[in-house]
Image (cartoon, rainbow, N blue to C red):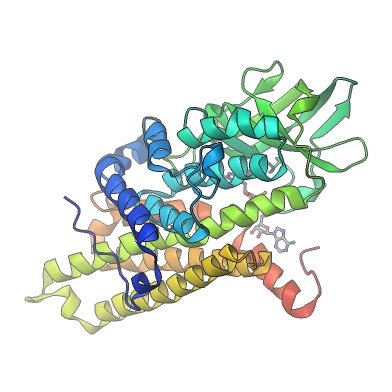
Length: 390
Ligand SMILES: Cc1cc2nc3c(=O)[nH]c(=O)nc-3n(C[C@H](O)[C@H](O)[C@H](O)COP(=O)(O)OP(=O)(O)OC[C@H]3O[C@@H](n4cnc5c(N)ncnc54)[C@H](O)[C@@H]3O)c2cc1C
């Protein structure tokens, strides 16, 4: 039985619709029941709990904003955010899986795909029958994906794909990959590559000390024949993958709130139970400072996420605004994990409590989908009109 109490200091729940609260409640209950009891074990084994994928599909965690016609639930972007928040309260790896499936695989097919591609892939992605991954980052091109080397050559009735992608979430378990590659004119194109095609391999990346309950690997293309009908017809250029990343980064801004809330809630409870010098440690000013600052930062981050959500629903959220929220909220969550861990003293470093796992996970989240520094430079660009990142 979970004792979790979600912080809502500024009564943000009053701004949510009944549908949004119902969706959040369903995912919250599921995380308590299915994720929390075993996630430490999976993280320790460095294994993704694959048996949860179908359940996540049934919950509506994949493509909540995709119309029902294609297997989604047609919900709004705040509901998507709340679902990401609850999943990440369980583990950033679980949220990452759902983020990739939703924003980086279903979204490009929905936005840029042909009707045939939508009908073929979206319902099965929504149900979790098939899993997707998103191949943008390369061994030598991370923050600068526009310089990618992966390429396609037109061979008449198919494209020949060559190159390699690295740090790809879900790569080894993916049935399909959304791959971004340059054509002979140097224009970035997106395509759907299926598992099992000759020349495609997906070796796993080992030795991660962060996001351990998540699959990460490479995608290597050695003369892979991509049928022409697998190209995403309605997008050309870097804005294709960047639009997908905007949606995923938006979800991260919400998701990390879940990790922060879990750390905060754990520390509040511990501070009331742990007795030192004859008093609960929560009675000492220095511990209250940590808790009060954590609640302040969570509240500010909640307001940022909620307002960004309303802008996104109105289709007005800019990439710069999304960068600001992703950067602020991940940093907030990581700092809270570090501070709340100290409230638990030595117990804070064990896996009897979730804080250390969240902290380690957040070290990936602060780097992927655009690093902390690069997001700051995006804001700097908007302030000055000068892109300092190139
Ligand atoms: C667990 C995990 C999962 C991931 N999943 C995916 C995935 O599913 N699909 C995918 O395509 N990618 C994925 N990534 C890759 C991720 O998006 C990249 O790691 C990220 O974009 C940063 O690239 P890089 O690691 O090559 O760092 P680099 O770009 O080499 O950056 C190294 C450092 O230099 C800084 N830097 C770089 N350029 C500048 C600049 N212009 N000005 C100032 N500082 C700069 C960065 O901020 C960083 O601190 C994942 C990464 C991780 C860790």
